[in-house]
Image 1 (cartoon, rainbow, N blue to C red):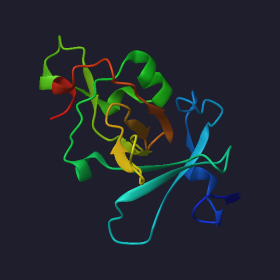
Image 2 (tube, rainbow, N blue to C red):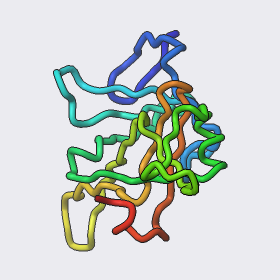
Image 3 (cartoon, helix red, strand yellow):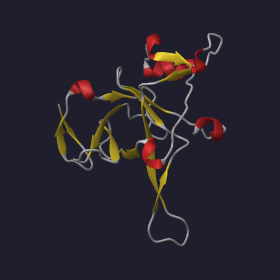
Image 4 (cartoon, rainbow, N blue to C red):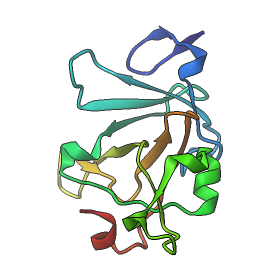
Amino acid sequence: MLIKTRYFGTQDVDPQTILFFSEGLPGFESCHRFKLFHEEGERPIIHYLQSLDHTEAVFPTVEPSWLGIQYELPLSQKERILLKCAANTWTKKKGTPEDTSDVQEDWLILVMLAGVRNAGENEPRIRPLVAQPVIINPQSRRGIQLDLTHEDFETILK
């Protein structure tokens, strides 16, 4: 399947590698199909989340480890449904049967990067959007973007 990308020209993409965000992304709710691209190299730092629905919608992302961040993300039932997580891919925190906070071990978590220009600055600064991580379930190829702006980050970031 041939697709047009903003930074990588026309690419031949295996349809089995397309990611689906059923709710789109905040501000881009009509973008549902995405493909991750990166520049050549052993361990690329920046991955580009390219919309297949709108060529101009592409989002640079990094793995949280590049920023020294480790997320601890218990997901709601709705978020698990959107990611199409199988029950056997979840483990209980601390292994206690009464603990209902599920934590997924095999997601791909990405942090979007945004260019922000403050008043009086000529060049934009790159700012990681740590409060809005992108979560992808590689098995189902489903994704969501969380909004943690109202969360206590000391319990979310390690």
